Length: 295
Image 1: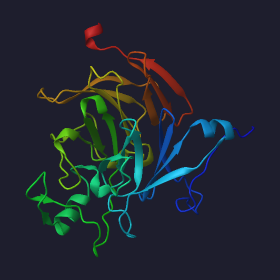
Image 2: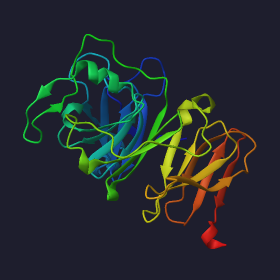
Image 3: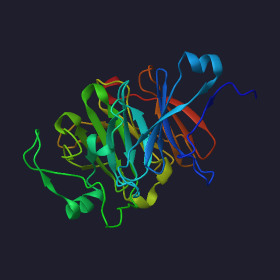
């Protein structure tokens, strides 16, 4: 196959082990990679020069203010928030919304911490008090510390609904929580908005495929539905969210067509309630579900 184009990864970020360097997402003519080591973001612009030459150099955004290992953990999933900002989830259960225009370290970005994040105890041990324009006393994430960096055996995944300022985070202990980014000004005051609730039918973190653990919101913003994969199960649940109900999460539909664990599932971006799911059984399914209202 003839090589058509090349995006060059900076030598400072290229892994020497041959492993995948990170996760990517695209928006219009931009491609952004979040590095698996959590130290930086890399952006390529697919502009006229790229079209004519098939080559694009990279812009690198350093997320770490010092040489220590990243406080927030490695980047495990990344999505554009808008044309100028990206959101990403880390291995330590932290969601960050980073403005590519600033190029500043993460301490100046929006930080959302999950209830199960090991960062919570780390911050409690390292917290300091400052006075700022937005808050007279607010906790500050430490830029460096002599203490070992936190690490987690818990898997996390996230998804976003930017039009509703919404971020959803799931953990491998079966918890789901949402954040409203309008209620979090900066990393100087990270907080969890809402209540962590249990996911239906989820037992514990022993039954997940950590690298495949993933949540995907429905592209229809008028409904609060999501799918969860990477659970070592042969089925895919469609879950409805309603925090005004006594049962905040309810199973709408279960697809039982696979004969081995499902590794990934995606919504069709336009067709209503159409989902694609892939499994270890080497099968790709396309299926639509109905709800009780359709009966």
